[in-house]
Length: 369
Image 1: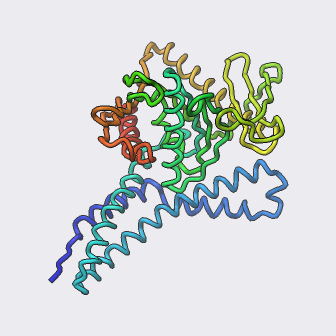
Image 2: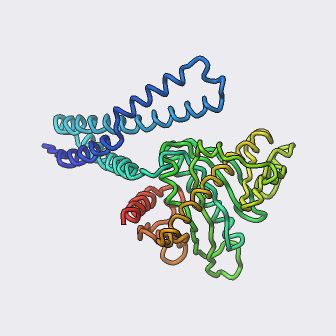
Image 3: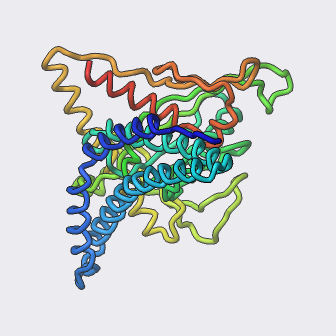
C-alpha cells in the first residue's frame, strides 16, 4: 500500500511562499493593476502614444508579477490534491508526478524568494543588456556570441519578451557586440549581477597550435528608465553616423542605410541601433539608451563625490566576475560568490539561475555590511 507523505515538505514551501506574498503585497499589487487598467481603458489613451506605452507596459509588468504568484498558489493546492489522489488510488505514477512537482515548485519558490531581495531603486525595471568582445581575437568574438545565446536562451526559458536592438558581427567568427532588451518585471535587478567581465579558457578552435586560449567579453546591464527621457542632450554634443545594417560576415541584409550610431562627444559613449525598420526608429531607440546611460553616469558621479567628501571611498566588486573553463576540468565558476557548475554545456544553454540567485544574495549581503 502506497503511503506518500509530503506534508512536511509542502508545509515548508507554503511557509516560504506566505513570506513572499507578504513582501510582494498582493492586495496592493491588485489595486495598482486596477488603477492601471482603468487608465489603459481610457478612450483618449493613445492621444499621447508615449504615455500610453508607459501605462500599458507598467500594466503588463504588474499583471505578469501577479500571475507568477497566483500560479504558484494554485500549483501548491494542486500538489496537495495530487498527493491525496496518489494515496487513495495507490498510484505510483501519480506519486512520481507529485515528487517531480514538489521539486519544480521548490525551484520556482526559490526564484521568487530571491526576487524579494530585489529592492533597489531600479530593480523592478526592464533591462537593456550589451555584450562586447574583449581581448582574444576570434575566440573573444566567438565567446561574445556564446554569451549572447546564453542570455537569450535564459530569457526564452522564462518566457520573457526579448528584443535584439543591435548586433555588430565580427569579420571572422562571432560578434563584436550586441544589445538587447528584456522586457520583464525585475529584469534589471535580476540581470544586473551578470554585469562585468567574463573570461573563457579553452583550446582554441581557431588556432593550429592546439594551445589553450584565454579570451574575454564584457557584459553591461542598464535599466529602462522613464526619467532618462528628461535628460536633454544638445545636438552639438552628439555625432550621428548612418550606415547599412549588416549580417554575419559583413553582408548587407537590407537595401537602405537605416542603422544609426550615436556618439556622445563629451563622454565618448557610443550607442548603435540597427534592428528597427527605419532610420528614425533606430535613432529614437539609440537616443533612449544614450539618455539612460548619461543619467546613470550622472548619478554614479554624484554618489562617488558624496563618498569622497565623506572620506569613505571603497572599491566596488571586481569587474572580472566569472570564468568558463572548457578544457581539462570542465567548470564554470563565479569568482565573487564561489558558486560553480561542473558542466558548462547547460550553462551556455541558458541554465544560469543558480549563478544569478547566488549573485543576488551575495550583493544583498555586501549592501548590508
